[in-house]
Length: 191
Image (tube, rainbow, N blue to C red):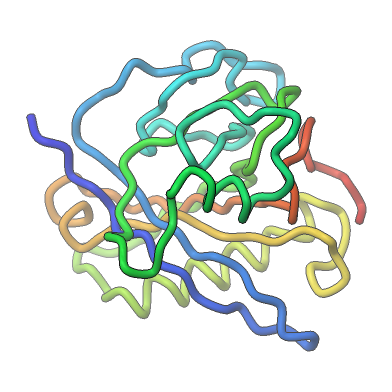
């Protein structure tokens, strides 16, 4: 069966200090070999490998460029740029990510999955608004620190119109990240 991607978009999230964050989205129809089958006590994967974005769960850590990170990766932006992953002229679709145990160096961590209601797709702008509000609301309880004062950022994966209609995809995955790759979970980081 062909893969059905989600659209990946970027937007600025405004707070008093005008903090920017990414807004991503992703999905696919074909099952990949899944690294999320074995889980730790937080629910995060204990294996590494390519994972379909439909299989991402709270507690999963992953790299956006579908490869393990090395210790000499300077920052998220350097990693993405060096991998040629993001360019504003590229198609902003993603179907899988490279999950790793959170104890390994990684770019992102899923901190909340939220299920949307409704039978009709509300539109890209409304989905982004709902994702932004939901992920903002969940951030402080996860990090145990206010977003406006935190050194961390959030972003999200959202359903596409096609995924909503064909696959009944209603999941927003809230994702936390730092300016540089991290090791360990950011749950309760309090900074």
